[in-house]
Length: 325
Image (cartoon, rainbow, N blue to C red; front, side):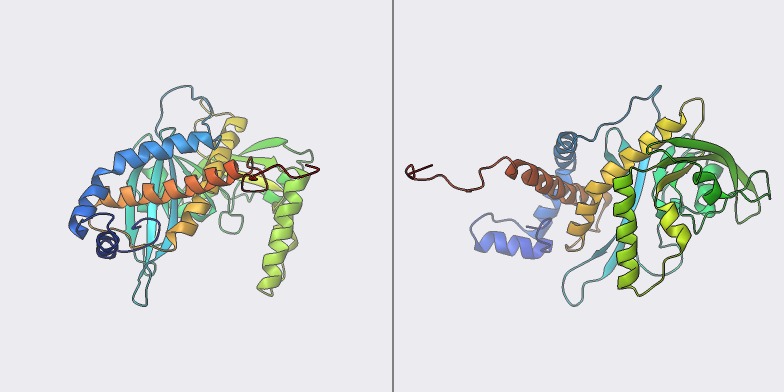
């Protein structure tokens, strides 16, 4: 009730008592939630494997971290908005960092600087983390970055100050699932240049049509005119990485980002569930347990949808045979 329905700890305790389900105080419920963290994590890991999400083989042990964020609005007229920042390790899928910030003000947006990055970390982020400032922050901590490119916010260069024509480069990829790589640099706010690899993959024709259709629908809804290059970029998956070439080929980089996209499908359901609920903000353990509980509900919902596809369309058993059937 607390995790799924969005009731506060106190409301949950009152409802449980009046319904005869349990006699537990809000403090006791918080303690139980905190102690259930590992149990909920294990359930999530098992259900995640059932979805078909599997990690590609690694040549050696390395700390891969997938970072993401979401807006949470607590229920009620006085419910506040919070920005949730969380990091999952792969392949364990363990939440190794969890932070809550306001949604407005300096330093509250999605950025790599929100996380305690350590030397040797391998970080993966979506377009929201595609900024030279964030990449510089990670590299300055001797970490490696793999990020989906936001073409509007992250320009590239050939050698130092020679601009790299990204649209022209990806335009040469004509076959579905064809990949290409270029050595490029980005310029940081401090004026320094960071070298890396720009990797691109052309989507299937069906995926291209779906993406372009979605972009056009969004533009009509907002009464905006799409730029021609926006529709062109929709044909590709483009990532920038500072991962060592000796450990990660072009295909491996794109495969790891594909895994991040697979997990993102689960996150989309999670974010829908996160729109309601009283987030326990007392300590990291209870907050992580609450997050795992939300993720568990998302995975259970996904499993239920898969299982029901195999059910009889009747939805019930007939009491007796019917003539002609």
